[in-house]
Image (cartoon, rainbow, N blue to C red; front, side, top):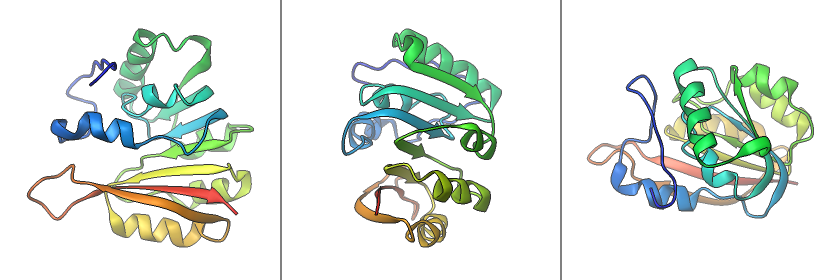
Length: 176
């Protein structure tokens, strides 16, 4: 995909519509450069590699051991070096331990973020949140909780699931 090369196994998730991969990667970028970023539900690092170009350091996690392994392979190939920390963890444990991050990128499963994760976001209040969602209902639920501290800056839809009613959405939130 452009300058990014990914390796994965059948046990890992990747966005399904390969015809839109490069456009999707170009879309999911922060609104400005940041020093420290945290990425939850990162999978094999589909968004990790492009994010590394926008931040000084990035901690990235997923609970799937195969995704963890391949995200590490992909980041090493991209020469992420000491700017990248690969974490095998569920989202809640990772965000609870994380310190001083300016940017948060989340790409949760269809059910969305858990209430404890949303609670940690509202405690830590990163300046920007990029939320990638494959379920508009769970996105709506999470945004209703996050709106007390965040404003919607922009949104986009990506048809990752052609010939279905499912859409991938991306929203950019900025701390009030």
